[in-house]
Amino acid sequence: MQSIDLHQEAVNLSCIGGGRWLPFGPYQRWVQQKEQAWQLTVQVLWWSGETAVKVGISQVDAEHRHLFTLIKALNLDNVDDTLNELLDYVVTHFSNEQELMEKSGYPEFQSHLVLHEEFSAHVADFLSASGDWNDERLVELRRFLNKWLVGHILTHDLRFGRWYQENGKNTAVKVSAPRPAAPKVGWFDRMLGRG
Image (cartoon, rainbow, N blue to C red):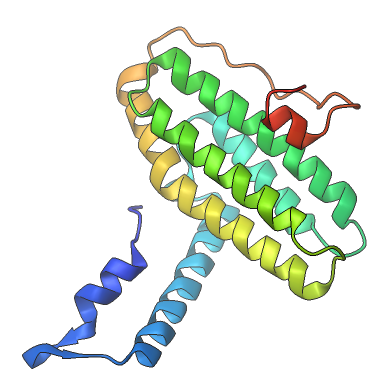
């Protein structure tokens, strides 16, 4: 499955014969409709086990499935515990994926690392803003996490998976098994390398 740049697709299609452009409102609705349909398709493909959303590296695929499971489990009754577990697991997954990339000599390792750091900064900003959890804030967090993870897997991780199948698979690489977080070190400290 190829990645979709919805905004570029919209720009390509928004100019109707004779150079007429769609007003912003219809363009925005069109993008939202396409984005919703795309996300639904990806969720159906992911949960049905279609290979289109798998990167082809069993440990990475298993970790991605677990991340989606944790995101799906987020609700107001368990938000603090589940969010802590999710964020710890994100750190573990990023560490495992980055280790695999580095040890296999993936040429885009540094740019992929930057994507993980940007994600971490965005989540930290989100969590530091406003205090109490309510339905709206929880939906916003779940929407962001799902959208980012799906987009990241279908573009960057899938690119790595293809490269790894063609180039790095024959390299002797042993990635650390998922490890539980140290009880006294939180996800943010681990992300900053303080744990």
